[in-house]
Image (cartoon, rainbow, N blue to C red; front, top):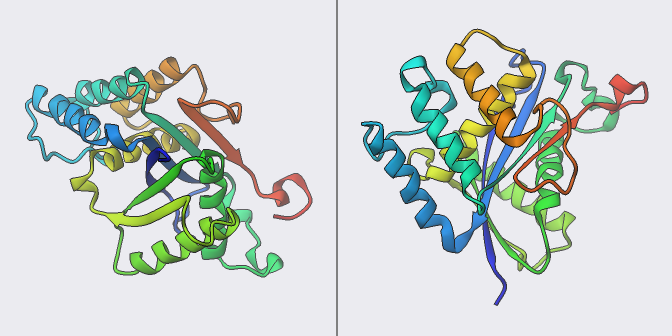
Length: 239
């Protein structure tokens, strides 16, 4: 029987008119048979720092008071060989020209999601994808994303990508981890400096990964894989 891989996704600055220059999509993945153990390990880190087991890890909650807790979570990610992360950094959102390519922002968004995830897929495995529940329009987005992923994989019977499902992030530690790692990559690429605690996390991730987080890694990189996508317009020939 084929091994099943769980993929947990999050996103940063993904709205069309949010006045942010970049969008970051991030995915944490691990084997299905390790998911409960990994979640329990993360809950143990929370309790070790005096936090309740149900405390929700979020990039937006990073502060000097919680810096060492978040560093421990980040170190756990690097220490567990079954945890992996990939980020797609879409640069220069402001110069996107969707109308010239007969698409809207949502269509482009799904293309970016496929570009982020496609290198993770192996037809000999099975995949279950979980996204943070954002709003009441989430179910439509989930169905559309599942269709896009399966069609591009010629997986019309959904035997490879078995499931794309929205979950509540406060209930799923791996989605929380995806939020943290995606936030770190976004902060690094937006070149922000307002939070010393967040800068410390960016520096730790750079140190542990060996990458700047602002340049594409090798495609074969499994632990921390970053793909920096730029619109063709910024290179002189469209999107």
